[in-house]
Amino acid sequence: MKTKKHLIILTLSMFVFPLLGMSQSANKPEATAFTFNDSWRPVNKFSASENKTQLGNNLVAAPSLTNVLNGVSFYSKNSECNAEKMVILKLINSNSYDVQISWQMSPTSPKVVVIVPALKDYEGSCAPDDKNKAKLVIIKPSESKKGEAMKYALSHISVAEVK
Image: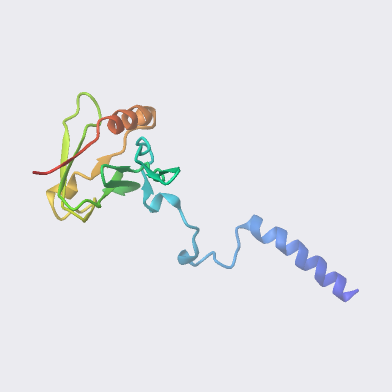
């Protein structure tokens, strides 16, 4: 009888404590859940690579890395800088030469040009240490204009070798 009573109390507490917002990790901020917005995500919007090679009787196609354009990998993450919502870019140049990357957010906005050295990563931040990296922080478009802005920007990105 005593065991049954304890079992009922234990079962009820399992349902009541979560409803009251009580938990073992309630006062431990390091126990918070992982949020995807805090991590880099690939910009998977470029056309897949068409590089194919003949290997005996088989045609071998490289796996499509759609966040790579002419040897440069594009990543983004959402952030907040000075209470303003921003998109921060990370560019990884896997080429053996410097590249010039340019894009435009809309037909009326100025063209943005960034030079990324050979075999280097360039990552924007809220407090950039050079003006090239400062261009990798973009004011996040409003939800109503987000799709249109992304579509335009992605169709107007170019990567070229610096000569």
